[in-house]
Length: 319
Image (cartoon, rainbow, N blue to C red; front, side):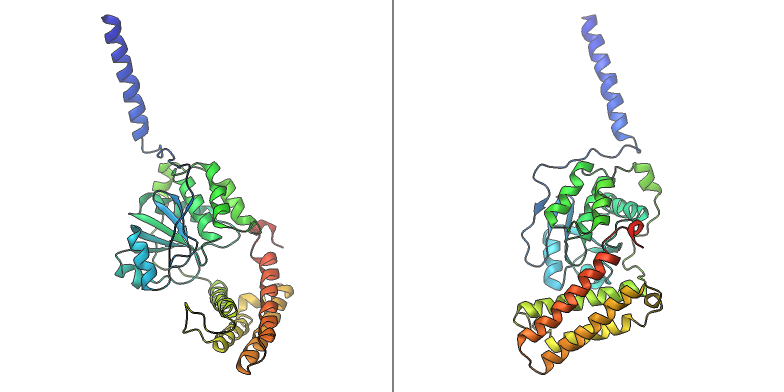
């Protein structure tokens, strides 16, 4: 009987010790990655949406009231944008959701931004939807890094999230961030300063590039629709979008930060500006669709080459 009492007492001490350790403020919660995650979410208005944790979804830009209603139906209470574009705070608030703007580039996630993201997924309420523009590159990386750092998933699971979302391996900085993601102690996250802004200040060059990206994307949709207004965006007028892209490239070259960039970077902008001008002319004059396609292909090629050299690599690799 004495041995039984001793066994019970010992077990109680062990249990209490484990419980106290589990409750220690410096011990993050145990990762709860399920075997079926990441999992594609069937969504009508949310591009490339993936569930990466029970609390966290990665995807593309929610555009229009229907997209925000779809987020609300998923239980989302917090939207985190890692894109450079200004978030639509009003539509989010109309659906009872909070917007947080924590943008980062294609060359990787800096340490402070990693802490911001991890603290956001740990502390902010409800389902958290992390998005960039297309939901293919920056947002899955941000979601993976945030969940690893917050202790929601294992570090070994991070790269699988990028691959599931279709993140291009050309974005070496993003893959590097995912591979280097590690658990951060709760005490460190507690001390991390973040006011979770609704909108963040964006440098002029980054803001201009966001405008180029969105207009370029519109023209790709127009091309896929046979150089007509696409069914999903009937308000997009082809020649007008080409004019906007032409002006974006022209204005980019006037920025002080661009004048200090290497000559090769400026040459890409000049090439793209001329191609956009040719595209606008072709669309306004009713030229054969092949003429417009050639002009857009020139823009696509210049963007790909410029991104490969100046956007897609880690900062440490840039010259």
